[in-house]
Length: 615
Image (tube, rainbow, N blue to C red; front, top):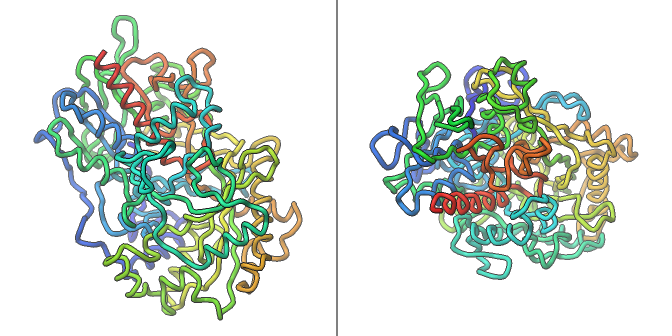
């Protein structure tokens, strides 16, 4: 995803001081891991072009960003064979074992396949710079996310208030994008590009979690994506996998399309600017400029054919960044960064939204250690058990098929009738109150030849947050990451903080149930002495992390009031031949993970683009 490259953060190379402990510990984890890349796919570092022998000529569509939306657009727009399409992606092609294996997610954080982005210091979150995971490879975050398939509920899309994007219309395109192993139904589709199935790994602790959820009054939800049931309750979250293998959108969607002669795909291509010209009194995009060989290499420009379009699908961070680098954005901030103004669009980079998260973790008694997922994966010396690897390689079963968070619940903590809290239940003990920190600390244990201690974790997420943030320019250098301010916990009423506080208390109630209490030894996080609102709020401020669902920075809406960037057709206000098609256009963040809604948006966008081009 994306088209701009921030500072390098390669394992084993120079490491920024603030990240040295994290990165060197992860380096040790990678070096000692028994999970080696399989022969079925390796990273591609050099230029890879499908179709014609070279990139050149003019294109009907230039897709900027090879993530979820970009892969779907390229597939759909080239299917008829009469439109020439170029995809430019800032990262490489990578189909290695850690990408294709769901449990490999731990080895993707802060790697060369990640943008390694950090927020500005968050005033309400302990003045911390918070890590924001974003996939930087062909397939984007569909290659590096938790593989959860969750749409939110019908009211999320009606709340957008944009003609043609309500729940009724959205459902049609969700079904179009989906290939659900449960089969076709009123709320599910088959034959789409997004492979969806039930989790393949089973653990007795999941049943105990379900029992604890029932004990505190939550109902069982058989399908969180069937809007007839609503969203509330506990159960399994479906995953974007195919028989236990990550079903990323590069493998499922773009790679098959690369056999077509009218599709060219270029990895490692950092787009630096959208080129805009004034024609007959109106602004029109004529092409893009990109760097195929990094910051110090020569720039390459590619042109659109007559009537062609540039489709920005670089994600909620990089799509607004590219617009601003191209002079499309808030006048004052562009002038401050030294960028010449093309058109004043105040909403570019505004209305940023994300899911804030915190966790609670509980150690298990030693006599129950064998129940923990981490014990089933790792032996007493911190090595991956051979039978675990064989079970995955031969049967596509076992704990390597899970990212660890595919069971959970949605809860209404306010009495509003809608869930404000999502709970994920990893059947392992968090070694640190931040998820990435757990893997760093495990690397340290591995160095000592020690095992991952057994336990359980509850990650609680404010799934319909009220806080809003923004993205801005640090400079006009396209290789310098933008300023990122998610605005965590800044809503005036304190609703997000209250949701997280309620989630922590709910997790404690669940551990006192007859299902879980007999297994547990002590509370590691937040800790048994953290009980009052003030104490919990302090813990939240010090440990809040991102659930990585950034949206809203190029939001949809009417052009009249200055609060939107694109219209219902996803065309950028005031600039012909330019659309944004990715999570950045969502006016309000859905109450679930954002991969499925992004695919829905891309499917509908492709239909609109083709319909318009054939009119």
